[in-house]
Length: 200
Image 1 (tube, rainbow, N blue to C red):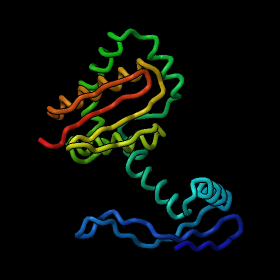
Image 2 (tube, helix red, strand yellow):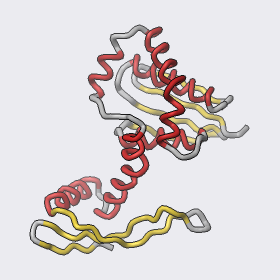
Image 3 (cartoon, rainbow, N blue to C red):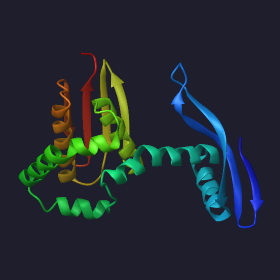
Image 4 (cartoon, one colour):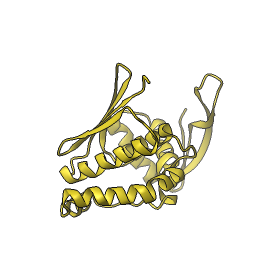
């Protein structure tokens, strides 16, 4: 349901919003709520919704979900926004050994603290959910396939070999910290592939 009412330079937006709690079957329930939004902002939302061929209601839900699941906890965890080009150029100045050493130091001292801030549960499943939220919010292309009990994450960074090495090393350390035995990370110059066997 969408309802728009003009009020000077602002409008009211009313639509269905998902509730935080799930019902007994695990399905997300929803309820309606009304917001007052500046007309210029809503015009931008309508334009983007048209470009994505989805409703304004769907787009608003995606934006709020992204804020709750990533942007809000990321700020508390001390994570910020940087130019991908700058990060890629900076890390390319390092040797492979320096990239691996830097990643090990970062993960051993910070990875679990960041994971605690991003998610309430200290589980590998929660870690992967947080990872996917970061990938989605950062607009990295990725897909998840399942084959014979193995989840395969294909992540395309397009930031060069050194960044792929950094992320591959980080995931190998995450597998170790969460005691995930049957998992491995592979890389190309621009892509990292994670293979996680769930059958055991």
